[in-house]
Image (cartoon, rainbow, N blue to C red; front, side, top):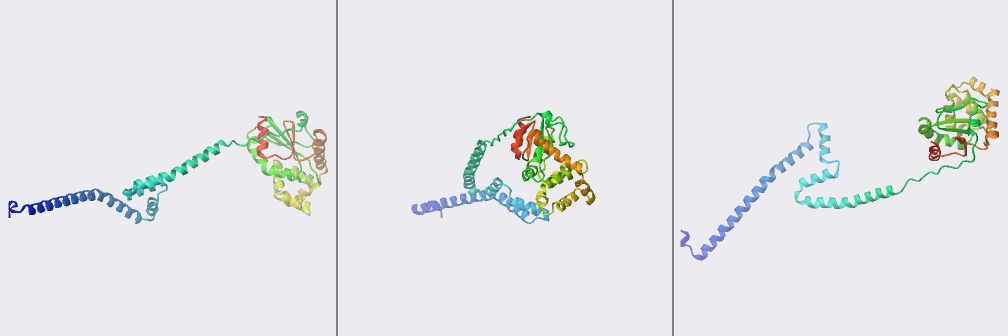
Length: 309
């Protein structure tokens, strides 16, 4: 049958059918094009995922796990975008919106912290000043000091071995000052005996009897262990145990503590500090001849030293 023989109504239906078929074919063609464009990426993604999840060896398994769980949010967001292109804009927008307040808050915190100035440590006021030449003149005992002889700042400390304030200074402040100023050649630190009781005198005597170069290590050990010997029921036995750690024997320990000349010199050093320089308490520091009583923190002593450099 020819098209000319169809009735007008049938011609119209035929035309509609042809148009519908054409639209369907066009849609199928577009769908195939989209599928063809998407297939390589999907196949590549699937292949990569399979390769990462089922590696050939244990070492690759670790790398695979790392690839599946990226270390940073940016990488994770990028992975999500590749797997779900339809939601990428929403995901990116959401991530950006969530990150903005945190970033702003972090920035405000940093600004606030930067705006708060560090607390300034005030330099302590001296209680007086003594003649530096007289202070540094030779005394009854050889000077026990560390640091350069020509350092710009000289600190002389009068201390007692049973004094808890002296122990706290040497346990918490002294090492930091030594590392910062003495070892750098800026400060010379001198220690002088000022024992308030027989146990303190005995501890000083043992430090003086220690092998050459061991005075300061002995002082440090006794201060760190002060509670074990200073308040022990039998101070002599407690000091003996401490001394054995420093290499003393029973004989050398007894010989040291029965040395009357040494005991007299320790006491003379104390009396000279009292009479000539007005030392009444421990610790007492003379910093370039200026007198300061009481223990100091690292920051306070640093501020004092810095003011004289």
